[in-house]
Each structure stands twice: as structure tokens, then as C-alpha cells.
Image (cartoon, rainbow, N blue to C red; front, side):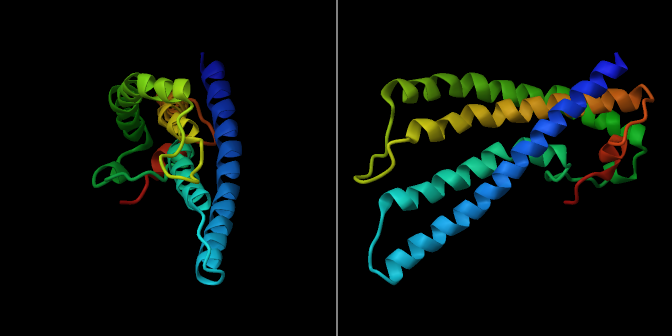
Length: 183
């Protein structure tokens, strides 16, 4: 079982790393689009609703789709008044409890509660209410499902890491549980 958990953990982490790199490059795209929007507005006195909306789309996608990657690198907000002083085994118990009883139920709730909202948007191929806006609101709303989905998959990977720690299996990522984010 430990071998399968470790393989699962590594697979998810490799996927999260690749996805995180793509999102990192999209931040560069976001910055370039923002520079173009500002230059067009203040240098050429020209505004574009579609360009302005694209910055909103990119910003939302980076934050919502980057949550799993952030969890993987243990960079999420954590109030670790006690946690940082715990042994790796106690930290694994805390992370296991948080993942199973907090993270996964919240992700499932978000998936269930957003499903019909997103599906309706797709059925309508919902577009921007603004004249000249992007006709892709349905794509943006899809992030409402991708966010908890990606976060849940990464949460399962973290749960696997906790179980490996509790089983006494040494991994190169076992110290990830002991790092704890700063808050």
C-alpha cells in the first residue's frame, strides 16, 4: 500500500508542478496585457472592454487554479502557533484531520453547489454583459469547478503523504509536512 500511496503522491505532485509552471507563465501574460491596456488608454486614448476583461479572467484563473499548487508547496495561509513546534508525526495527524474533515468536504460542497450554475452558463454559452466584452463567461465560470477539483486532488496527495509519514515511510517530501507555512 505504501508504494501505491507514494506513486500517487509523486504523480499528483508532478502534475501540480507542471500546472504551476503554466500558471506562472500566465502571470507574465497577465502583466503584458495590463501594460497594453494602460498604454492604449493613456497613450493612445483607446479603451478595450475585451482586453480589460481578459485581465480579470487571467487573474481569476491564476488564483483559482493555483490553489492546489499552493497547497502542494505548503504556501497556503496557516496559523501555526502550535503546529510549527509539533513533531512531523503530530503535524501529519493535524494535516490528515484537516484534509479529511475540512478540505475534502469543502471541495465536495463547492463542486456540488456550483455544478448547476456552471452547467447553465455552458448551456447558454454565456458571454459578457458588456458591449465589446469577451463572449467567454462560461469558460471563466468553469474555474468554479476546476478550483475545488484541483484542490481536492492535491489534498488527496497531501493526505497520502500524511499516511506515509504515519506509517513511518521515509520520503523526500516527508519534511514538507514539517515545514508549515508562515502566518
